[in-house]
Length: 251
Image (tube, rainbow, N blue to C red; front, side, top):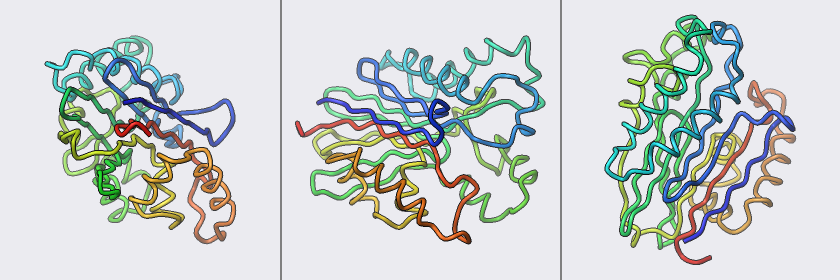
């Protein structure tokens, strides 16, 4: 087993994604690029939050007896303690999506919160995407930014890592036998837009490309973003794109 990490910021020097591996734990966080008015109570950057939380989650998840949700809740509490004395968090603070993976001798454990994703690549070459669809459901139902924001970390809405440790209990968790897998890819939504926005791949072909040549995939993704017609362009034409791959087949 070995790991590879590739990240490509939308704006050089301003990457709000965070990814890393420590021991048998891997994480990718995608800082939520919401308008500054929705995080007006905090002067810290989105990158500061996602990077600080990623480091603490990696540390807290090292003990396999600690459930991943509990590790995330503890990491959120720890980051909150770094700035709650100087920031009015109830007026809005930075947030991030989370995907985490921990492996043992015979299985992988996973945790996914919000629209980051885990692509589990089976030995048969197909891939299953594990993600949290609640943000997508809210955005289909609502169009006004203020209404969408009001449903962040609220019952019946969607959940992200912010300053509320209880958000960790809302994460999607599970486990998969290592014997069923060729690899696993932790990705920010800057990567999955290759499927959802650009139509370049399905989940299986995306996983294959990420395992074979992620640098080429990122180049093709950026070119496809540039070719989008004006009417189909998202609010951010380019997004930070991060993939952390766990290779289980020696490739």
